[in-house]
Amino acid sequence: MTDGAGFREAIPPALDGERIDRVVSLLAYVSRNRAAGALAAGSVSVDGQVVFQRSRRLREGEELVVTGFEREAVHVPEPDSSISVPLLYADDDVLVVDKPAGLVVHPGAGNSTGTLVNGLLASHPDIAGVGSAARPGIVHRLDLGTSGALAVARNQAAYDSLVAQLADRSVGRRYEALAWGLFEAADGVVDAPVGRSPRDRTRMAVVGSGRPARTGYKVTAIWRDPEVSRVSCRLETGRTHQIRVHLAAIGHPLVGDGTYGGERSGLVLDRPFLHAAHLSFDHPVTGDHLAFDAPLPADLREILDGLGEPESLDRPLE
Image (cartoon, rainbow, N blue to C red):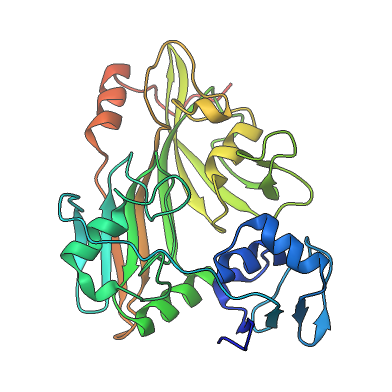
C-alpha cells in the first residue's frame, strides 16, 4: 500500500528471512544502494521501530514502512509470441513449465526482454499482474543454465497458495545432476548456510552469515573414466545456486559449471549439468496432490550416452 511519499507492506512468506535492504529494493523497485541510503537516513521502520542496520533479517507478517521516496515506476514485461514455452501441465489456476536451459525466467537487470515471462504473457495473458507486475505468476525460479519443471500461478489465489507451500517446505523438488568425483557416501545431506561470496558478489558461497540451506543427495550412478557421479538432489530450501554451491563445497562441482569449478577437460558442456526433474505440490484450489516429471533434455542425455554404462553401485565409493 502506498502511504504518501513512501509505502507500507506486510512481509509475505516468500521474503521471510531476507535482509531488509534487499526487501526494500525489491518492494520499492529501486537499487540496493538506494535502499541502503533510505535505511541510513532513518526512513525505514519495522513494526514501528526505525531500522538502520541493512543486514537486519525480516520475518513474515512484520510491517515494513518506508518514507521519503516513492516507488520507482515498474517495468511491465511485454508479451513476446516468438518465445515458445513448453508446458508439462495447464489448468485455470496453474501452469507447470518445462523450462529450457539458456532461457531467463523473468526480466531483470540486463534482461528486459527475451525471457520466459515474456513468452508466457503472449500465450497466457491472464498471468499479468499476478503476484508482481515485474515478475507475473513467478513463485520460484530456475537459474539461466538450469532446465526443467517450474510452477507458474495464473491467479492471485494460486500464487498465494504456492508461495505458502514453498515457505512451509511442502513443495517437492528433485534435481538430476552430474558431479565431478566419487562421493565418500552414497547419500547424505549438506546443511550449510548460503549467501553472497565476500570475494565476488556475483557468486554465492557457503558463508556463516548466509541463509540456512539444506540439500539432500543420493548417488545413483558412477563412472571411473572420467570420475563422475550422477546425483539425485532434493531441495529442502531454495537458495540461489544452492545445489551448485553445496556440491562444490564438498568437493564435487557440477560438470559444466565454470562458476563453481566444474569446467574441466574430459567432458564439455556449455552449462551446469543440472535439471529440475521432478516437481510436486498441492493444487491451490482442489487440494489434490500433483506431481510432474520433466524429461532429461538432449544435451544432458548426450553427455550420459558418451560416458557409456555406469559402474555398479554395489562397489564402495572411494
